[in-house]
Length: 564
Image (cartoon, rainbow, N blue to C red):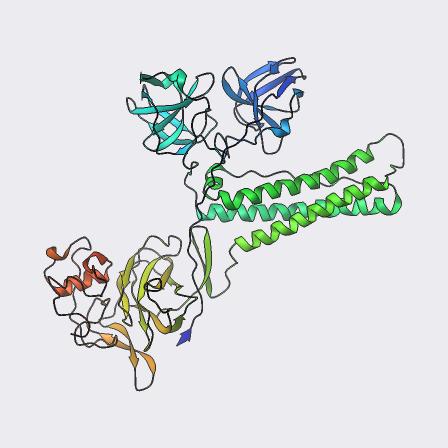
């Protein structure tokens, strides 16, 4: 008999702050190289929309990329991206432009997203003249949010200045469609607001917990990869402080900024956005220290003298970057799940993680609930088509009412079975036939912890049994004579959620076997109290409206409650 002390923390991270954003205006740039490509998205490998020659001016510049290497421009009413290398700024400050990227940020930004979910509809009615994609922004570079079929109806809520793209509200989705595939049925589209309305929530596209933890690990790895560059440039500036001259050895690598895909950023915005901002600022400071050293080394003359003021400023930048690296590492380590060791498994659910003990089948484990801990979990290795039974027995004087679920560890919300029991009663599930060979998780919780005046308190025993070839089902029992938990047997093939008449304190004495014909049946569709009990054990809690662990007591199980 073993005692486990592990707790499960399952929660949700889906709070997105929506505020207005201020768009910078008045930025103008001109092409000074022989030509410049206008691309669909801010990347060298992206599709080229068109090419313009030297002297071409972009008079509407609306955003910049996160690495400050690309500008979003209006080109013939369409959205395009131009690299800053062949450009000169004629007017305005590009650093005042909002950061945007069709691959990672919804149109309008996360503060005022112009795509996502909405409850609003527009005053202009329209229909699709062909199958058309709803995108998260007015360009084919943005991800697809939904599809509208031929002749399906929608309402228009906004437009681009050129009218080439409409913002639409379609079955709760707010997004952008090409106006070529839209026929207006009623209303004046010229009165639609340019850039559209703000969504209730930004778009979320099929993210997973592994994606979330993956980007946290990537950010931590990127910091560790940039650390040698920071160490090298620190040593170079420290040497310059001592000698008054720069030793211009090969320069360290300049670390780059990082971007996060739009679905992931949308779902975990409140966590990832501050981390991403601080990460990019830290990398900027590393690059600043390196670039300043390169500038010193490329001054005319010999010996590369360095003034003390320059050295002090550079070392302050280096120290600031190191402080930012250390802070980011601490925050990332606090968010990332620990590595599971031998005898443990890692449960991940809704952005939270917990290490659980790996327990053995046919071994009794003792655990407890108290005012701090009223949920716990265990994992075990199962084989395809193996039949198992799982049960937990509160010990005497425990005031807990147990809820139990069994599911695959990699899909903890895909329950193979759930059950609950009244205060002090044994809760059990089984037999459950495991669908595949993998690791499984058992979750136990005190379902009355939030409603009961006193806090949960008491020990309980847990047992997983292999009943694939067993005629008798092992049953947890408390032996008052020895004060210990023992394994008895139940002649039934189904372990009941609550003891049948003739049992006491979770000790089964030959319950009659019964099978639930369907967990979708109500009390009027069942024939016996035993069937109702089996269906309650299988998870049909609607049969027990008053939560006293006696199902269908006004129809089938009258007078068969505990104590009768």
